[in-house]
Length: 106
Image 1 (tube, helix red, strand yellow):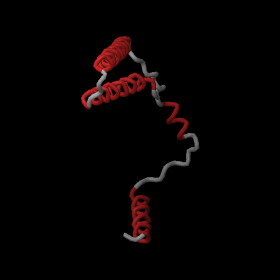
Image 2 (cartoon, one colour):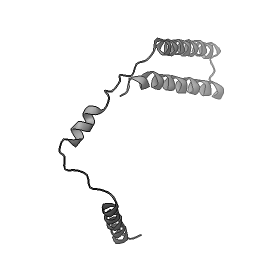
Image 3 (cartoon, rainbow, N blue to C red):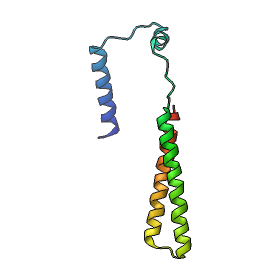
């Protein structure tokens, strides 16, 4: 479509909507009244079980990092499988960090 056709279509839709729908009132306090009636934002609360789960998962991930790192150092060889395991540990760490921070975002 050309730009002129889109503009014509927009104008046609605007005209149709104005004919079919009622106009909004000119009450300047409308927005404030609506906003005052909305409930307060509830602070996101993280339960103790979620915190405990994140803490345990973090500890397990750190222990696995250390144990796997020691096994690589003792074997003094780095294989593709080792890199894949480290990549999966990294992905788990990132997803754990995102999961821990998500409830605190607002």
